[in-house]
Length: 260
Image (cartoon, rainbow, N blue to C red; front, side, top):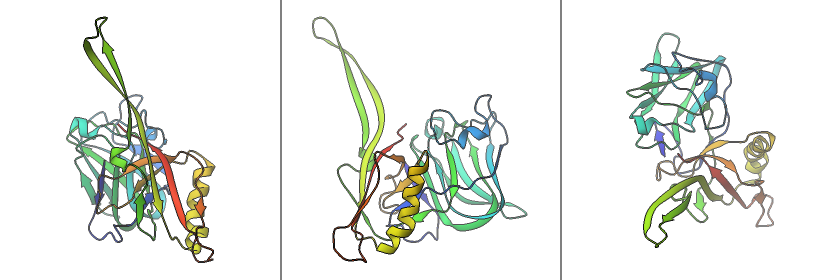
């Protein structure tokens, strides 16, 4: 897992959530059959876009200039194949790079950069023929309070099942490890009533309306490995803990998430 923070990003100790997504026409410079460009728009993580040749790019044209301050990649094998992944936009005459990374593993990527208003955005893959399962560009949501963990930090929250194989005599033969994704919880306290009725409600409505996946980094600059491509485990609610109209109390994000 990795949060990649470009110069100029503010409030990097506060939770950053990537749930808004731009829409538009999606193309790619090349693609393997069955792994076409539009596969990376879908929120599931079992397939995606795979270039036929590298370097390659996956591009989205929003049709008009839109503000974008994050790119999330929810599933990939860039770490396994040694690929470099870069994020760029078209400024009308040239491609401008805003972020780049060579992942060390295959867990989610979350690129954060100062907001840029542009019509065409792309992800460039070089040095390895990586498959990118889900790609999302949008305006990141920065929450106004610091977060705290309940239970296990994200990078310790991978769920595994161990299956031991033994002989009739009880000798150890082998062990199989089965991954079951992530399970974690993040709490944000003392949110304002204005935030609860605004950004929080918009986010919650988004989760209730459909597939409801998002990228979350609780403290990007302090814990860059704490990032997940996630979805709620149950209905999210804000709880008022103080009888004061200006305080909405605590919000707990109880989530499942993608693990390679």
